[in-house]
Image (cartoon, rainbow, N blue to C red):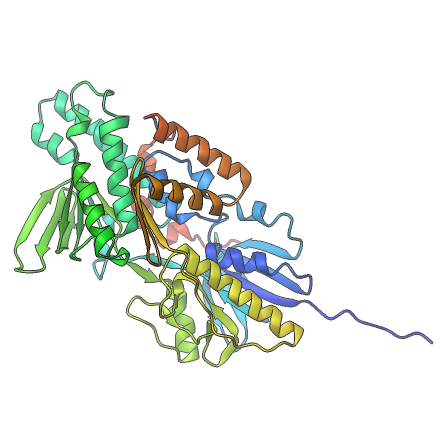
Length: 454
């Protein structure tokens, strides 16, 4: 007499997003009892903290954006699919995507929503036309083209005797004095004063004017008064003009208009190149699932999840990373990494029949930001470091979290070229990089998403 035994079907986990939250959730779900499907709009994992180094020519985009398929090539239970998620049905447990006009619907048993956040222009999205954000590889390449292109155009203007144009082209405005803004401003100063110093004949790149603007009253506000003060002094020593307590009220092709938070006085800065490094807005998918679950959103559009990172009434749905609003958890890589691992742990506990519902506990591993070559600030608990020791710590931590040995080695070599020497190996720019985003916007959705032909 024979007995038929059936192997239970694997638990289907759908992960939306290939950022830190989605990536580390999927990596933690390597158990063969789980079948993981990762769906993302790009085919790479982006190490977003180093985007500004792509924009300023230090690193290539491939170094900080390894292919997602390559990362999971050795994890047999994980499938990667390209797709832009358009709808999530919590009751039916389905996710609908579209890629180049191809519609797909996926089902799941558990869902990890790690779609991240987009740039926010604080209710003025038209600012983006002239002040690109820094959230994607496309953004970084566009900014690289704008930055290096500004010096090239200034050389032409100077040769033609158009001094007013030269001043406008050699003025760079960075909006947002958080870590990204500080790092970008510092690299613009390094670029103009070291890398390009001897390369032009009609302009003096070292005369470039770099402004760091923020409505807040200090730089790096989350780092505390002491480090904020030291950072502001270091920026001033680099020749960067720090304008605090000033809100951007208008942006056009030729400059920005700032308004004082104290007296309302306005000031116009003539500048052809602007970088928007201020503010984030939760991915629209957060609103879609929150409306279905009756969950609240914070003012940045992030979902207010339960303590275990699940949606109210939907214990099978986890929201992690920049899309989750959790008290005491900053929107940094560590928050997403730890949140993704927590979601994976809860899913595996449930499958083993163990108790679930444990609250997510965030372990603060500190904050850090570079100011320039050999200068950084770092804060972890009561420990505060500045200068060279903090810079070495910054290098080590970022190198550790870059995915893949090849990328780590390439990054180390690029850093040696840029920081020990003065060159930057990634300076190739094209006109297409600068104008492609605007061209696609002007052409509209009919061009980007052509109807599928039978």
